Image 1 (cartoon, rainbow, N blue to C red):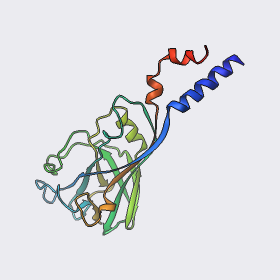
Image 2 (image 1 turned 180 degrees about the vertical axis):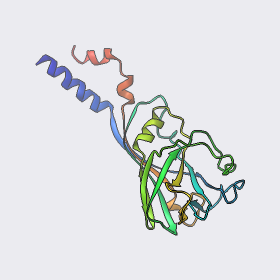
Image 3 (image 1 turned 90 degrees about the vertical axis):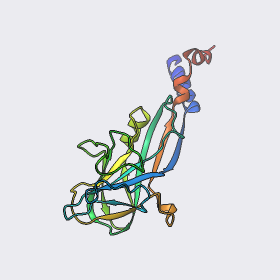
Image 4 (image 1 turned 135 degrees about the horizontal axis):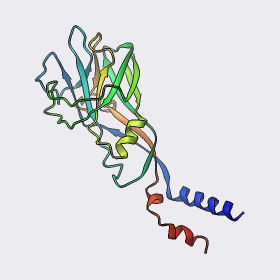
Length: 208
């Protein structure tokens, strides 16, 4: 009974010191890059154009700032994370799209096809683009890596079978006509920072 009581109290103590929360982060750093004009920067473009076809490749490049919500010294469990882009024009139909994390830093007003960051061979998340509106990617594992210390340089958004038709237009954060449809990252998480920082001595004091 004594052991059961200890674990019960420790469990309740953990519940008090931790909490589940959620946040939606809207980006203000996005652009596109394309082989048609490989030296051009599109940092103020209204749309993030992906794919293209006809021998031309286009990708979106997007970064979400996590620093206001996640302390690098903290300890968080990401319960779920959904990255979303809104297709306004020329939507694909059941076409596979992928999110790939950038391996290097980039600047919104500088990035071009010629100097874009490298990405891994395999996508961090995929989904089938299907019609207009929000297209969602489950990036739970990627966001967990970011809050655990992986450098967050954002992602590249691309068709899995690039280059092929159709090209599609996702709304960018520079599109003042559609501020409610800018790229966003929804995160549901539990903050265990306080549990990690508590001393065992304080826990033992509960039994005195």
